[in-house]
Structure formats: C-alpha cells, structure tokens
Length: 206
Image (cartoon, rainbow, N blue to C red; front, side):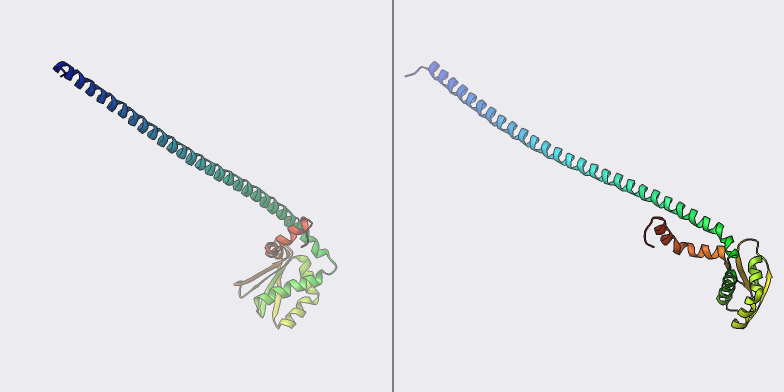
C-alpha cells in the first residue's frame, strides 16, 4: 500500500500533467484563432486594396474622359470662332463692294426691283421713297411711274439716304417702314447664307 506522501506526489503529477495539457490545448486554440484572424485580416486588406485600386482606376478614367471632352470642346469652339471670323470678313468685304452695284449697266432694273419689292411688302397705295442718288436717277427714268401704275398707288421720291444704296419706303406718316437697301438685304440674307458661303470657302459643294 502506497504511503500518503506517494499519493500526494501522484496527485501533484496528475494535476501538473492536466494543467500542462490544458495549457498546450489553449496554445493550439490561440494559435488557430490567431491564424484565422490573420487570414481574415489579409483577405479584408486584399479586398479593400482591390476596391481602392478599382475606384482609383475609375477616377482616372473619368478624369481622362473629362480632359478629352474639354479639349474637344475647346478645339470645336476655336474652330467655330475661326469660322465666324472668316465669314464676318467675307460679308464685310461684300458689304464694301455693294456700292459698285449702282455702276452696273442693268442697275435701272435692280432699282426698280428694290422699290417694287419694298412697296409690295408694305401693301399701301401711298408712300414716300428715300433713295441714294443713283437709285433716284434710275427710278425717275420711268420705273417709278410703271410701278405706281402696276400697284395702283401714289408713290413719290422724298429725299436721299444718309448711307447705303437702294430704297427705304415709308407710309402712313412714318408708321410703316421698309428698308430695302442693298446693305440691309445682305444683312437679312447673312444668316441663311453663312453655311453655303463657308462650304464654298472650304472648297466643298454648296
């Protein structure tokens, strides 16, 4: 039969063995948990890194697209500005040359057309016509009488123009007014002609 001392020693060894085994088990579990946490952290970090990279790529693409759109807009704006300056120059030069129209051999017919159109637009049977010297001379050669006969109206030349070539017609004590000078006609047509004129300048078919 074992002595009491031996029993106590065995009990101590058993307790120590069990404690050691528990400690080892706790270490294993702690290590496994640590590895799990580490792997989870790594996966989360990788996912966050992927998200950040994707967002950065999207931002870079958006900024690149915006830069391209801005550059294209500036180029288009510059092209349109150049086009408008070119067209303005063409029409300004055309305006300067309008004064030479009165020197044409057929200007009597042109003057008659200008007066007839203006009077027809107002649709009156009595009106006063102001015109430049060359147009007045052309109308006084019989064209105005013929127009008055055709339109059944009383039309008189009331004076000259301060600028421009052609006619300005007034009726109803100045309440009705129609400017049919060559310069005003060019201005009225300018908007409709710009595209065709530009095509001609660029060598394209109008």
